[in-house]
Amino acid sequence: MITLFHAPHSRSFRMLWLLEELGVPYELKIVNIRRGDGSGAVDPANPHPHGKVPALTDNGSLVFETPAIALYLTDRFPENELGPRIGDPKRGVYLTWLAYYTGVIEPSLTAKFLKIHHIYGTFGWAPFDDVTGYLSRALEQAYLLGDRFSAADIVIGGSLPLLMSRGIVPDSDVLRTYVQRIIARPAHARAQAKDGG
Image 1 (cartoon, one colour):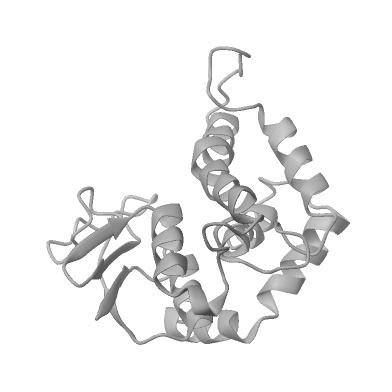
Image 2: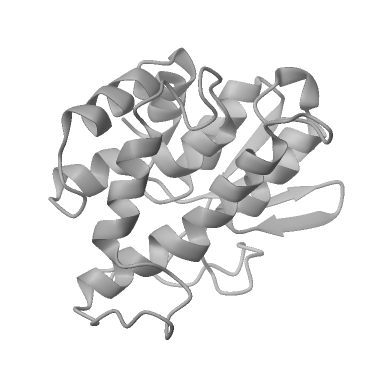
């Protein structure tokens, strides 16, 4: 049985959404986490080594980090076509977007937030404006894989509404239209209901 260790209104929402998209049986285990405002605490029931979410267990295997869980689940349930299979021409693009999220997007957002001056050649990621520009150009199509919705859209697109509402990611017609498109999916509404609205 798949178990998702989840904290309401956190980054793990995206994996809750993915599980709803997949339509597979799973157990949702609510755990406490440390929050940015200083509230919360590490929950001993959470198997994540740093007390964070998401974490997922399946048949004795522990998987954590959002892109790893997304890849694990889409490979585990390929019939749902939320991740291109090995040999599919879109597989490389899919893997790149999953890696790009934690390897480039998150560090660039953190650097912007902490006001760290980006020096080319020093950091393994690009400056924030370059990253958001690239993302906007990529989303001039329907989804990150073109006309095909995938777990990459959940991993990357699932964080955009909050980032845009807080003014962290600049609002644009392209990003706004993309976000509206992906959150209109029925599985997103089901995940929100389980997350607490």
